[in-house]
Length: 502
Image (cartoon, rainbow, N blue to C red):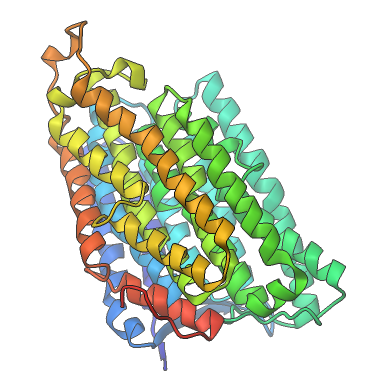
């Protein structure tokens, strides 16, 4: 049943209005931060108010205006969109508090512009989640690019400017190809509306045209998701403040890229067309190569944020891999990994930021013994690290288990080998950080003066770490996220799901 309601529109515009009020409050830091916190809670409240009905199979829909007689600016809350919308809106709350503590303790400049751009990014992420068609999706996808740019070059150093330009070159160029692909899609199909199972078929046009069209549509998502060889911008963007890194890697940008690929594969082309055109095989091996190569590179990174950046590149390809296998369970795992990875990776980045602000250390080799001075921070880091590796009772296990079952379901034994190797590599580049922090001796004596970070930073870290465990035991806790993943996978594949966690 379709419920015609303005709520999806309110969920999108609340962060946009917050950005406006934040800019007006530039000379009043407390008021500026009040608007940030208020908007984060209000946005999450509106999004989660729609969860009960959407979990029953209903959708909320609101049309703002018409682009043309056949293309509308419509917001719609299907199961996949609700999952991404819940993740983006909820995580804004802890990241907002964390950002306030970080920006004040680190004495960052341009804080007004930072919080305003941050709010626009959340507006874009929620808009991407609730877009009913390709045109609306494109508007919010490009708005996210523009809003993220000032955050990447926030420091205004030469390195930050270079990273910002690099980010724009990667994202805007592929964004224009995305728009061209949308135009071709509309010309061929007469519609841009997302349809579970896809509205294009292999017979819509000659194979070579369909393959080029897929490339035009998928590149923008592949860039934002950090799929190799298009991931060069992501490690460079680590020059940004840590709350931006958390935004890039957990809440908005890379998740928007992965979600874009799910929309193209599951709601534009669909499993039948992808299989007939041989596109699923190409995606699987690009994703598998990205997982292994990025993990190997991560092992060599001494800078903690860059190590986490390469981890993100690999972990996001789990979503692409699960989607490309086109089995009900693999798609369920791919969708749930959007939530699982977001919660774990935001924890890791917030821990890294706490170390930077408190101990002024950025490299793993400099962190000997710091875990004994910041035990809560590194306990949370350890929990999230084990979850990234797919250990049981942490949320990462749920999504990766379903992707593994999906590989069995799709009869892809080589993918099973990739998943096993990836888990070992994740342990190899994350657990040494924990070992260094807790068990290596600090011979310099530098850390004797340091304790935990500011409570505004520490509390969000603890909340997301605990949530990683809670969702690892109760995957539907709080928002029916696993139900949404299952429902969306069934809609895309038309298949029955067995052997998962429901």
